[in-house]
Length: 412
Image (cartoon, rainbow, N blue to C red; front, side):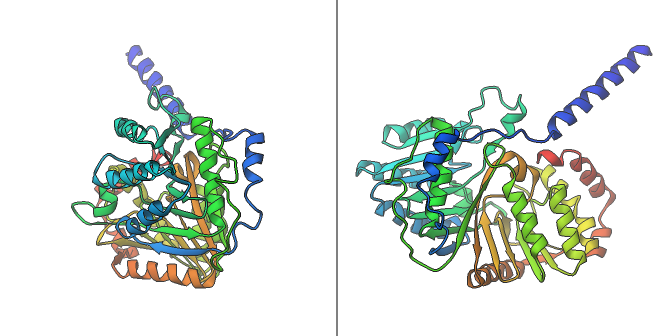
Protein backbone atom coordinates (compact mmCIF):
# COMPACT_ATOMS: atom_id res chain seq x y z
CA UNK A 1 0.00 0.00 0.00
CA UNK A 2 2.90 2.34 0.77
CA UNK A 3 4.24 1.79 -2.72
CA UNK A 4 0.91 2.90 -4.16
CA UNK A 5 1.05 6.16 -2.20
CA UNK A 6 4.64 6.74 -3.30
CA UNK A 7 3.73 6.15 -6.95
CA UNK A 8 0.76 8.51 -6.72
CA UNK A 9 2.96 11.15 -5.10
CA UNK A 10 5.61 10.79 -7.81
CA UNK A 11 2.92 11.01 -10.49
CA UNK A 12 1.44 14.13 -8.86
CA UNK A 13 4.86 15.81 -8.66
CA UNK A 14 5.68 14.87 -12.28
CA UNK A 15 2.38 16.26 -13.55
CA UNK A 16 2.85 19.43 -11.50
CA UNK A 17 6.37 19.96 -12.83
CA UNK A 18 5.13 19.38 -16.37
CA UNK A 19 2.37 21.96 -15.99
CA UNK A 20 4.83 24.49 -14.53
CA UNK A 21 7.24 23.83 -17.40
CA UNK A 22 4.55 24.26 -20.05
CA UNK A 23 2.97 27.37 -18.55
CA UNK A 24 6.15 29.25 -17.59
CA UNK A 25 6.43 32.72 -19.17
CA UNK A 26 8.33 32.59 -22.50
CA UNK A 27 11.97 33.54 -22.38
CA UNK A 28 12.73 36.35 -24.84
CA UNK A 29 15.54 35.63 -27.30
CA UNK A 30 17.48 37.99 -29.54
CA UNK A 31 16.44 37.75 -33.19
CA UNK A 32 19.22 39.85 -34.75
CA UNK A 33 22.49 41.12 -33.21
CA UNK A 34 22.14 44.83 -32.31
CA UNK A 35 24.70 46.03 -34.87
CA UNK A 36 22.99 44.16 -37.72
CA UNK A 37 19.59 45.34 -36.54
CA UNK A 38 20.74 48.97 -36.62
CA UNK A 39 22.14 48.46 -40.11
CA UNK A 40 18.81 47.16 -41.42
CA UNK A 41 16.79 49.73 -39.46
CA UNK A 42 18.82 52.54 -41.05
CA UNK A 43 17.46 51.51 -44.46
CA UNK A 44 13.81 51.93 -43.42
CA UNK A 45 12.72 55.60 -43.25
CA UNK A 46 10.85 56.75 -40.15
CA UNK A 47 7.83 57.70 -42.29
CA UNK A 48 7.78 54.40 -44.22
CA UNK A 49 4.22 53.73 -43.07
CA UNK A 50 2.66 56.60 -45.05
CA UNK A 51 1.54 56.79 -48.69
CA UNK A 52 0.38 53.23 -49.39
CA UNK A 53 -2.35 51.49 -51.33
CA UNK A 54 -3.99 48.38 -49.86
CA UNK A 55 -5.93 45.66 -51.67
CA UNK A 56 -7.84 43.00 -49.73
CA UNK A 57 -8.36 39.36 -50.75
CA UNK A 58 -10.66 36.91 -48.97
CA UNK A 59 -9.09 33.68 -50.26
CA UNK A 60 -5.82 32.31 -51.59
CA UNK A 61 -7.53 31.55 -54.89
CA UNK A 62 -8.43 35.21 -55.29
CA UNK A 63 -4.93 36.35 -54.31
CA UNK A 64 -2.90 33.94 -56.45
CA UNK A 65 -3.27 35.59 -59.89
CA UNK A 66 -2.28 38.99 -58.48
CA UNK A 67 0.65 37.55 -56.55
CA UNK A 68 1.93 35.47 -59.49
CA UNK A 69 1.75 38.56 -61.69
CA UNK A 70 3.85 40.47 -59.14
CA UNK A 71 6.40 37.63 -59.11
CA UNK A 72 6.54 37.62 -62.90
CA UNK A 73 7.17 41.39 -62.91
CA UNK A 74 9.92 41.19 -60.27
CA UNK A 75 13.21 42.75 -61.33
CA UNK A 76 15.57 41.96 -58.46
CA UNK A 77 14.14 39.74 -55.72
CA UNK A 78 11.11 37.87 -54.41
CA UNK A 79 10.98 37.00 -50.71
CA UNK A 80 8.39 34.56 -49.38
CA UNK A 81 7.85 33.41 -45.82
CA UNK A 82 5.20 30.89 -44.78
CA UNK A 83 4.38 28.72 -41.79
CA UNK A 84 3.53 25.95 -44.27
CA UNK A 85 4.67 25.64 -47.87
CA UNK A 86 3.54 22.16 -48.81
CA UNK A 87 4.34 19.77 -51.67
CA UNK A 88 1.16 19.82 -53.75
CA UNK A 89 -0.28 21.40 -56.90
CA UNK A 90 -0.68 24.88 -55.42
CA UNK A 91 2.83 24.88 -53.95
CA UNK A 92 4.24 23.65 -57.25
CA UNK A 93 2.49 26.53 -59.04
CA UNK A 94 4.16 29.04 -56.73
CA UNK A 95 7.47 27.14 -56.68
CA UNK A 96 7.57 27.08 -60.49
CA UNK A 97 7.02 30.85 -60.51
CA UNK A 98 9.96 31.30 -58.14
CA UNK A 99 12.15 29.02 -60.25
CA UNK A 100 11.19 30.91 -63.41
CA UNK A 101 12.14 34.16 -61.66
CA UNK A 102 15.52 32.65 -60.77
CA UNK A 103 16.05 31.60 -64.40
CA UNK A 104 15.73 35.20 -65.54
CA UNK A 105 18.16 36.54 -62.93
CA UNK A 106 15.83 37.45 -60.06
CA UNK A 107 16.80 36.42 -56.50
CA UNK A 108 14.01 34.26 -54.99
CA UNK A 109 14.13 33.31 -51.31
CA UNK A 110 11.74 31.03 -49.45
CA UNK A 111 11.68 30.87 -45.64
CA UNK A 112 9.50 28.27 -43.93
CA UNK A 113 9.00 27.01 -40.41
CA UNK A 114 11.34 24.04 -40.18
CA UNK A 115 9.31 21.90 -37.76
CA UNK A 116 5.94 22.34 -39.48
CA UNK A 117 7.47 21.78 -42.94
CA UNK A 118 9.91 19.00 -42.11
CA UNK A 119 8.11 16.44 -44.32
CA UNK A 120 8.59 18.60 -47.44
CA UNK A 121 12.37 19.17 -47.20
CA UNK A 122 12.91 17.08 -50.33
CA UNK A 123 10.79 19.53 -52.32
CA UNK A 124 12.79 22.47 -50.96
CA UNK A 125 16.01 20.80 -52.08
CA UNK A 126 14.48 20.50 -55.55
CA UNK A 127 13.70 24.24 -55.49
CA UNK A 128 17.29 24.93 -54.46
CA UNK A 129 18.53 22.99 -57.49
CA UNK A 130 16.32 25.26 -59.61
CA UNK A 131 17.86 28.43 -58.18
CA UNK A 132 15.54 29.22 -55.27
CA UNK A 133 17.29 29.92 -51.96
CA UNK A 134 15.39 28.12 -49.19
CA UNK A 135 15.83 27.99 -45.42
CA UNK A 136 14.00 26.55 -42.42
CA UNK A 137 13.39 28.70 -39.36
CA UNK A 138 14.65 27.21 -36.08
CA UNK A 139 15.34 23.54 -36.90
CA UNK A 140 14.26 21.00 -34.28
CA UNK A 141 16.44 17.88 -34.00
CA UNK A 142 14.76 16.36 -30.93
CA UNK A 143 11.11 17.35 -31.42
CA UNK A 144 9.52 19.32 -28.59
CA UNK A 145 11.86 18.19 -25.82
CA UNK A 146 12.71 21.81 -24.99
CA UNK A 147 10.15 24.50 -24.29
CA UNK A 148 11.82 26.75 -26.87
CA UNK A 149 11.00 24.16 -29.55
CA UNK A 150 7.45 25.49 -29.31
CA UNK A 151 8.67 28.89 -30.54
CA UNK A 152 7.61 28.60 -34.18
CA UNK A 153 7.51 31.13 -37.02
CA UNK A 154 3.84 31.56 -37.91
CA UNK A 155 4.31 34.57 -40.22
CA UNK A 156 2.96 34.59 -43.77
CA UNK A 157 4.32 37.38 -45.95
CA UNK A 158 5.75 38.14 -49.38
CA UNK A 159 7.93 41.03 -50.56
CA UNK A 160 8.65 41.82 -54.22
CA UNK A 161 11.48 44.24 -55.00
CA UNK A 162 10.95 46.03 -51.69
CA UNK A 163 7.91 47.80 -53.14
CA UNK A 164 5.01 45.32 -52.90
CA UNK A 165 4.17 43.15 -49.89
CA UNK A 166 1.52 40.65 -48.88
CA UNK A 167 0.47 39.86 -45.29
CA UNK A 168 -2.32 37.58 -44.10
CA UNK A 169 -3.45 34.20 -42.87
CA UNK A 170 -2.93 31.91 -45.88
CA UNK A 171 -0.22 29.34 -46.25
CA UNK A 172 0.67 27.80 -49.60
CA UNK A 173 -1.21 24.51 -50.00
CA UNK A 174 -4.19 23.09 -51.86
CA UNK A 175 -6.60 23.26 -48.92
CA UNK A 176 -5.98 27.00 -48.50
CA UNK A 177 -6.97 27.40 -52.14
CA UNK A 178 -9.74 24.83 -52.61
CA UNK A 179 -11.03 24.32 -49.08
CA UNK A 180 -11.89 21.19 -47.14
CA UNK A 181 -14.35 18.41 -47.92
CA UNK A 182 -16.98 19.99 -45.68
CA UNK A 183 -16.60 23.63 -46.78
CA UNK A 184 -14.49 26.34 -48.36
CA UNK A 185 -11.47 27.98 -46.75
CA UNK A 186 -12.14 31.57 -45.69
CA UNK A 187 -9.06 33.73 -45.18
CA UNK A 188 -7.89 37.34 -45.46
CA UNK A 189 -4.75 38.71 -47.11
CA UNK A 190 -3.74 42.29 -47.90
CA UNK A 191 -1.52 43.43 -50.76
CA UNK A 192 0.40 46.56 -49.74
CA UNK A 193 2.12 48.72 -52.32
CA UNK A 194 4.20 51.63 -51.14
CA UNK A 195 6.69 52.53 -48.41
CA UNK A 196 5.21 50.10 -45.84
CA UNK A 197 6.57 47.23 -47.95
CA UNK A 198 9.98 48.21 -46.59
CA UNK A 199 8.80 47.43 -43.06
CA UNK A 200 7.67 43.96 -44.20
CA UNK A 201 11.06 43.57 -45.88
CA UNK A 202 12.74 44.43 -42.59
CA UNK A 203 10.79 41.67 -40.83
CA UNK A 204 11.81 39.18 -43.52
CA UNK A 205 15.45 40.32 -43.40
CA UNK A 206 15.55 39.79 -39.62
CA UNK A 207 14.09 36.28 -39.91
CA UNK A 208 16.33 35.36 -42.85
CA UNK A 209 19.39 36.52 -40.91
CA UNK A 210 18.31 34.41 -37.92
CA UNK A 211 17.81 31.34 -40.12
CA UNK A 212 20.85 31.65 -42.41
CA UNK A 213 23.27 34.24 -41.01
CA UNK A 214 23.02 36.20 -44.28
CA UNK A 215 22.52 39.95 -43.93
CA UNK A 216 20.20 41.57 -46.49
CA UNK A 217 21.16 45.17 -45.72
CA UNK A 218 21.73 47.06 -48.96
CA UNK A 219 19.73 49.54 -51.01
CA UNK A 220 18.78 46.89 -53.61
CA UNK A 221 16.60 45.24 -50.94
CA UNK A 222 15.47 48.56 -49.44
CA UNK A 223 14.94 50.95 -52.38
CA UNK A 224 13.94 54.57 -51.93
CA UNK A 225 10.25 54.61 -50.93
CA UNK A 226 7.69 55.68 -53.51
CA UNK A 227 4.26 56.80 -52.34
CA UNK A 228 1.50 55.29 -54.44
CA UNK A 229 -1.54 55.99 -52.26
CA UNK A 230 -2.80 57.79 -49.19
CA UNK A 231 -3.13 55.04 -46.59
CA UNK A 232 -1.00 54.90 -43.42
CA UNK A 233 0.07 51.30 -42.77
CA UNK A 234 1.99 50.19 -39.68
CA UNK A 235 3.68 46.79 -39.71
CA UNK A 236 3.76 45.15 -36.27
CA UNK A 237 5.79 42.04 -35.51
CA UNK A 238 5.83 39.99 -32.33
CA UNK A 239 7.30 36.81 -30.92
CA UNK A 240 9.47 35.34 -28.20
CA UNK A 241 12.47 35.66 -30.54
CA UNK A 242 12.85 39.40 -30.95
CA UNK A 243 9.98 41.71 -30.09
CA UNK A 244 7.99 40.07 -27.30
CA UNK A 245 4.15 40.04 -27.23
CA UNK A 246 3.62 43.24 -29.21
CA UNK A 247 0.54 41.95 -31.04
CA UNK A 248 -1.10 40.99 -27.77
CA UNK A 249 -0.38 44.50 -26.49
CA UNK A 250 -1.76 45.98 -29.73
CA UNK A 251 -4.95 43.90 -29.53
CA UNK A 252 -5.57 44.87 -25.91
CA UNK A 253 -4.96 48.53 -26.81
CA UNK A 254 -7.48 48.37 -29.69
CA UNK A 255 -10.10 46.80 -27.42
CA UNK A 256 -9.46 49.32 -24.62
CA UNK A 257 -9.74 52.21 -27.08
CA UNK A 258 -13.01 50.96 -28.64
CA UNK A 259 -16.03 53.13 -27.92
CA UNK A 260 -18.67 51.74 -30.31
CA UNK A 261 -17.57 48.36 -31.62
CA UNK A 262 -14.64 45.97 -32.01
CA UNK A 263 -15.07 42.90 -34.22
CA UNK A 264 -12.78 39.89 -34.68
CA UNK A 265 -12.38 36.96 -37.03
CA UNK A 266 -10.19 34.07 -35.88
CA UNK A 267 -9.99 30.28 -36.25
CA UNK A 268 -9.46 29.92 -32.49
CA UNK A 269 -10.68 31.77 -29.42
CA UNK A 270 -8.44 31.17 -26.41
CA UNK A 271 -7.75 34.73 -25.22
CA UNK A 272 -4.85 35.20 -22.78
CA UNK A 273 -5.79 36.75 -19.44
CA UNK A 274 -4.98 40.35 -20.44
CA UNK A 275 -7.14 40.15 -23.58
CA UNK A 276 -9.88 38.27 -21.77
CA UNK A 277 -10.16 41.05 -19.19
CA UNK A 278 -10.15 43.71 -21.94
CA UNK A 279 -12.93 41.99 -23.92
CA UNK A 280 -15.14 41.53 -20.86
CA UNK A 281 -14.59 45.14 -19.75
CA UNK A 282 -15.40 46.46 -23.24
CA UNK A 283 -18.62 44.44 -23.48
CA UNK A 284 -19.73 45.50 -20.01
CA UNK A 285 -19.24 49.19 -20.80
CA UNK A 286 -21.50 48.85 -23.84
CA UNK A 287 -19.04 48.25 -26.68
CA UNK A 288 -20.36 45.93 -29.40
CA UNK A 289 -17.87 43.03 -29.25
CA UNK A 290 -18.28 40.31 -31.88
CA UNK A 291 -16.17 37.26 -32.73
CA UNK A 292 -16.59 35.01 -35.77
CA UNK A 293 -15.24 31.46 -35.47
CA UNK A 294 -15.35 28.25 -37.54
CA UNK A 295 -17.78 25.41 -36.81
CA UNK A 296 -15.00 22.81 -36.73
CA UNK A 297 -11.25 22.64 -36.18
CA UNK A 298 -8.39 21.89 -38.54
CA UNK A 299 -5.90 20.62 -35.94
CA UNK A 300 -7.98 18.33 -33.73
CA UNK A 301 -10.96 18.91 -31.50
CA UNK A 302 -9.02 19.81 -28.34
CA UNK A 303 -8.48 23.38 -29.53
CA UNK A 304 -12.17 23.76 -30.39
CA UNK A 305 -13.22 22.48 -26.96
CA UNK A 306 -10.76 24.88 -25.32
CA UNK A 307 -12.24 27.75 -27.34
CA UNK A 308 -15.75 26.79 -26.28
CA UNK A 309 -14.72 26.82 -22.62
CA UNK A 310 -14.65 30.63 -22.78
CA UNK A 311 -18.06 31.07 -24.41
CA UNK A 312 -20.22 31.11 -21.26
CA UNK A 313 -18.32 33.94 -19.59
CA UNK A 314 -18.16 35.96 -22.79
CA UNK A 315 -21.84 35.52 -23.63
CA UNK A 316 -22.85 36.50 -20.09
CA UNK A 317 -20.89 39.75 -20.44
CA UNK A 318 -22.54 40.58 -23.77
CA UNK A 319 -19.91 39.40 -26.28
CA UNK A 320 -21.52 38.10 -29.50
CA UNK A 321 -20.08 34.82 -30.80
CA UNK A 322 -20.90 33.79 -34.36
CA UNK A 323 -20.15 30.44 -35.99
CA UNK A 324 -19.33 30.79 -39.68
CA UNK A 325 -21.38 28.19 -41.56
CA UNK A 326 -20.08 27.85 -45.16
CA UNK A 327 -16.63 26.50 -44.26
CA UNK A 328 -13.47 26.97 -42.25
CA UNK A 329 -12.93 30.48 -40.87
CA UNK A 330 -9.13 30.99 -40.89
CA UNK A 331 -9.18 34.78 -41.29
CA UNK A 332 -7.35 36.89 -38.68
CA UNK A 333 -8.76 40.42 -38.69
CA UNK A 334 -9.84 43.14 -36.26
CA UNK A 335 -11.93 46.18 -37.17
CA UNK A 336 -12.96 48.85 -34.67
CA UNK A 337 -14.97 52.08 -34.61
CA UNK A 338 -14.72 52.73 -38.40
CA UNK A 339 -11.14 53.74 -37.67
CA UNK A 340 -8.72 50.87 -37.06
CA UNK A 341 -8.28 47.75 -39.19
CA UNK A 342 -5.80 44.92 -38.53
CA UNK A 343 -4.98 42.04 -40.89
CA UNK A 344 -2.28 39.53 -40.09
CA UNK A 345 -1.18 36.03 -39.17
CA UNK A 346 -2.04 36.11 -35.45
CA UNK A 347 -4.81 33.93 -33.98
CA UNK A 348 -6.63 34.64 -30.72
CA UNK A 349 -4.70 32.11 -28.66
CA UNK A 350 -1.65 31.94 -26.37
CA UNK A 351 0.44 30.15 -28.98
CA UNK A 352 0.14 33.02 -31.46
CA UNK A 353 0.41 35.81 -28.92
CA UNK A 354 3.21 34.35 -26.76
CA UNK A 355 4.99 31.45 -28.47
CA UNK A 356 5.05 32.25 -32.20
CA UNK A 357 6.62 34.80 -34.51
CA UNK A 358 3.72 36.80 -35.98
CA UNK A 359 3.13 39.82 -38.22
CA UNK A 360 0.21 42.16 -38.90
CA UNK A 361 -0.64 45.26 -40.93
CA UNK A 362 -2.48 48.01 -39.05
CA UNK A 363 -4.37 50.58 -41.12
CA UNK A 364 -5.71 53.64 -39.31
CA UNK A 365 -8.01 54.98 -41.97
CA UNK A 366 -11.77 55.47 -42.00
CA UNK A 367 -12.22 54.38 -45.60
CA UNK A 368 -10.23 51.18 -45.33
CA UNK A 369 -11.79 50.31 -41.96
CA UNK A 370 -15.21 50.65 -43.62
CA UNK A 371 -14.17 48.23 -46.38
CA UNK A 372 -12.95 45.64 -43.86
CA UNK A 373 -16.14 46.16 -41.85
CA UNK A 374 -18.09 45.26 -44.98
CA UNK A 375 -16.03 42.05 -45.31
CA UNK A 376 -16.93 41.15 -41.73
CA UNK A 377 -20.61 41.92 -42.28
CA UNK A 378 -20.69 39.66 -45.34
CA UNK A 379 -19.22 36.86 -43.23
CA UNK A 380 -21.59 37.38 -40.32
CA UNK A 381 -24.54 37.16 -42.71
CA UNK A 382 -23.41 33.54 -43.23
CA UNK A 383 -22.95 32.89 -39.50
CA UNK A 384 -25.10 31.59 -36.67
CA UNK A 385 -24.83 33.62 -33.46
CA UNK A 386 -25.04 31.62 -30.25
CA UNK A 387 -27.57 32.79 -27.66
CA UNK A 388 -26.91 32.50 -23.90
CA UNK A 389 -29.98 30.25 -23.55
CA UNK A 390 -28.79 27.98 -26.34
CA UNK A 391 -25.36 27.70 -24.75
CA UNK A 392 -26.77 27.00 -21.29
CA UNK A 393 -28.68 24.03 -22.73
CA UNK A 394 -25.59 22.23 -24.09
CA UNK A 395 -25.05 18.63 -22.88
CA UNK A 396 -23.05 17.75 -19.79
CA UNK A 397 -20.61 15.79 -21.98
CA UNK A 398 -19.74 19.00 -23.83
CA UNK A 399 -19.08 20.81 -20.55
CA UNK A 400 -16.74 18.04 -19.42
CA UNK A 401 -14.81 18.18 -22.70
CA UNK A 402 -14.49 21.96 -22.33
CA UNK A 403 -13.15 21.63 -18.76
CA UNK A 404 -10.60 19.02 -19.81
CA UNK A 405 -9.40 21.07 -22.80
CA UNK A 406 -9.11 24.20 -20.66
CA UNK A 407 -6.32 22.48 -18.66
CA UNK A 408 -4.01 22.60 -21.70
CA UNK A 409 -5.35 25.82 -23.23
CA UNK A 410 -2.10 27.70 -22.59
CA UNK A 411 -0.34 25.48 -25.16
CA UNK A 412 -2.99 25.58 -27.90
